[in-house]
Image (cartoon, rainbow, N blue to C red; front, side, top):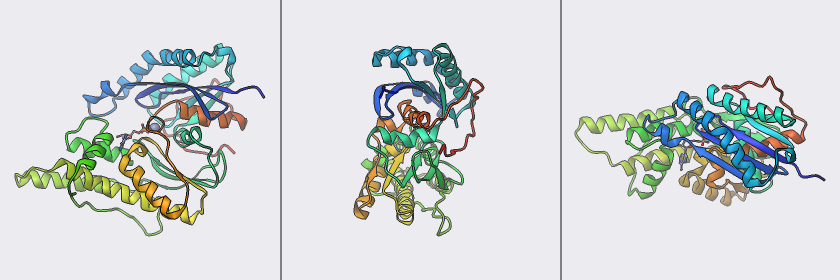
Length: 338
Ligand code: KG4
Ligand code: ZN
């Protein structure tokens, strides 16, 4: 069989990325141009700045991905592009680049859901086995997704307010840490001796939903109370208290869902899956249960195009095709393609 080469492009948020994926599971090249430095001084992603960076970087990363892969456009099978969700202006830059590239090189185009991409990052590390449970934790999403087979997604729980990563970034601001705050809180939590006690939000007993805004408020209130009393907070202890709460809730609910749905494999995905505390807690919990648990290396947890290529390859195989009418879909829902 002829090799399948997918050129994948991702511009949904603050990374301009392009990658080439061979036969759905092999990374041939994976180029990420991060804009984090440009957004840092604003304490978050500024959509207009993100779009401008994408315009400047997108053709460069595509060329770099092809050069590193030593491939000509004529050797490609298809172009995969993040169709949503994300910042609409940012998405559109990638989509237009993908359409232009596909049109000029007579290639089919496949529109990929960003979260399907995060989940499929795992398929680049070892084969996904079904039924599977995915914990998706990123700056915009906190979801438990059940998969019966490739291309089948069932949302069994999601956040009712803030995403886990969003809570990390907001708490980091309270602690005067740079954006994105997740890695800094993670580091401080590991340096901590002792922890401030914050609540765990479980919601209804049966629910697989999450809520992190109450926890975020608890941290903010704690800081205000300490300020009013003229006392200094210990940042490491606040970070650890916050992280302990997030990790315990995520781990407990994921474990319960894995048992109830009797899955063969559990995977974690998204930027917050880079969190050391969370990775360790999930690894230990699932080792005890004897359920295989995987999480991709850090580089494949945060936004990248390789994951979009991994999902796009499977979609292409299943016959999914986009067209030149494709538009950015900021609120796109995760739908099954089988
Ligand atoms: O998946 P991602 O790169 O972008 C989105 O699709 O949102 O996730 C970014 C989020 C940010 O909120 C960032 O603070 C968080 O992932 N993050 C972390 C860690 N590394 C990145 N959160 C906790 N611990 C980390 N080590
Ligand atoms: Zn993401």
